[in-house]
Image (cartoon, rainbow, N blue to C red; front, side, top):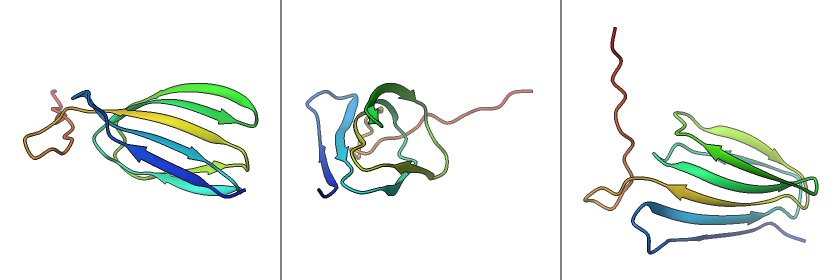
Length: 93
């Protein structure tokens, strides 16, 4: 079995992309900062997990086993250029 990946867009303005990955081998994969938060349905070691992720500021490496898979729905605000922009964080004292 080999690892398969599919990424598609959405007709909804707030859904930036929908990704599905099924791992055919043990693997290390990276989640990269993209200005989105995600709703992730992950099957790991035969158990279903549902995650709600926030914005990340640096790459995160994750380990996957053979047979693991996930479906991720990435949400973000559209910008005029068609990219996703995270709202700036303003620190107050």
